[in-house]
Amino acid sequence: MAEKYTVEQHAALIGLTGKCLEELLGDYGKDVYINCITRYARQRGRRMRNRAIRDGRPLNYETFLAYGELSFETLPGDYQVKSESPVFINCCMRCRWDLGWKQYGLSKYGEAYCKYVDINLVQGFHPDMVMIAETMIGLGDDCCTFVDVGYEQTEESKARIAQIKQELNGKYVRDFLYHMAHWLNAATTIVKGIVSETDLAQFTQNLKAQFASLVGDALAEEVFAAADQDFDVYD
Image (tube, rainbow, N blue to C red):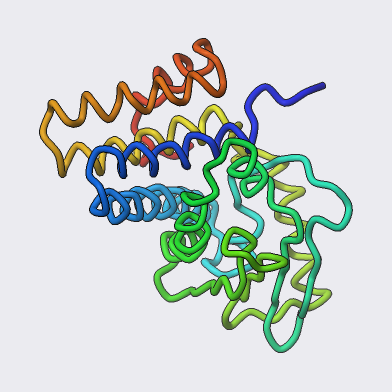
């Protein structure tokens, strides 16, 4: 069964946000766009953190790797472990976000997302944890390389992560309608705090029209309607 809401649609909305901000604000729009990425990622990390605390889990890499909200189809070889010791290094060989940006001609705006999303996601989960993106497909590298600073993966830790995932059974995974709506909410919140009401309306209308031109009016309406909620709330 085909995915109704996809990574590529998510990538399109993210990239178009950067494009529309640049159209509205010029070079300053690029900085605002990075603020949007930061807010979105840190909110996601905080939701993971708050669920883990509520569930009585330690705030460490094992919990972080088990509590992710994203789930999407991958192919064999999309992800490869480069190193488990002394530091866990994971490589993404085929990124569906990158494919989406390329599909829609938005790779320029994917670069900033690649640079800032993961480090802020981890920081939202715990400010003392650091994930370094050493290489990124969106910046022209052969793969995305993620270094989980301070975490050594062992057979025991892999077993614990698998056990947590089994216990959660996808409980906290959200579909890409949710993630697109969250992105839109985070971006709009940032833009609203910077520009006039007139410019905010222009930005929103432009983004919605350009997104609809790629994914269709019905999906665009659905995403914009779903964005009207509090994404700091976790369940």
